[in-house]
Image 1 (cartoon, rainbow, N blue to C red):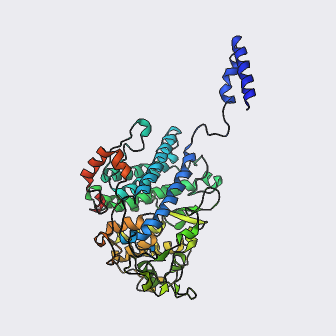
Image 2: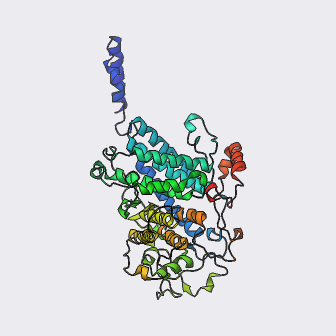
Image 3: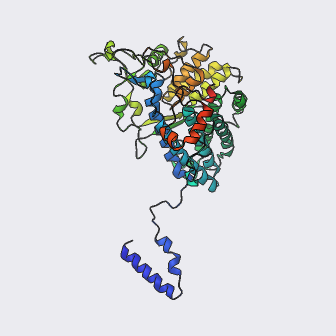
Length: 491
């Protein structure tokens, strides 16, 4: 509408009001409303940006942090320093802190509008997402603001910190409540979500709600196992109850139900890598990571890595990595090591949130420890098969005939294969290593931090400077703000 039109309407309104007619004013707001701008936000408006934002960020962190600290890959050449040598800077956790709180603010708003809309399915999804992000945040830092976090509109700009025990107690309870809220008879009315339904028709059938409920309960399995060292959480009892009642607590039972975001490369659904080549430039596969796959004769090798080549680059010589945190010059290697496979980050690609394979490995560990009455070997083999097929490889019929890959009745074997099942899954390899100390990672004399794997990020400088009192209180309770200070569930 141009200025002349608005002026004429305003002049007409003045004339009509002078004669006692208010009809013009009654629809002035309607006339002056921009039809291209959202007037009221819905839960569906927030869901897809949250899913894409979190999943794509976590995928990038899996590459630039987890791959390095867990000996999946390393910079090459690299004669000194780096995360693979446990050289963790003060700012290493800044992007994680900032991004997680950004999306937590959106999740909080999503839950509020879900409650206002009286839509229990979206509220349950919001509770699930909130538990997912807070677990990641707390596992990266320890004690974090939660009760008073993302409440700046209320004037709370310096939130108090919650202990890690408080965080876990709340999010595990929230997942229990979310499980009761999901209603598969009611569709998610605000359109398709990019995780579990690509079309509105699929959404209308309610199939995606059933999968969201499985994700909710599968995530609860993960978090209960993570705190299982803490007797006060009674985690094993709760895990036994959940697994013993699949009707009440449905979890992933196949790869099609897993929380894996498909990145199409169309529209805004893009690869986190603007240039896929950046994923492989100056990189090498780790010897530890590739040697185990070689021992397994594992078909995932070709999915995860390229073949090594002779020094002149002309001849492939199989899959061969170099030691993570190697000492000395790169000239010591008389070959060009295997690299990461660029197809992993070239759309269409996937961002892994939680897999069916992880659920099977959780069950394998619980069965091994007698928590559930089940066969750990079956769950172990299910987990391996699920991981291989998840990445599009074919499960060899004789895979478990190989002594290196066969179930041997030990937690070490379960956790070694779980390490591969958690490939490219945000920080999960790192978190599980901290829980179990497995798999055993080789060390070198070039490693810093007394050759110890760091167990957390330091709080960002902005937290220390802008919220100094609550930061000081948190550190006094939690322990030194240091990369070696263990979290509550690790002790």
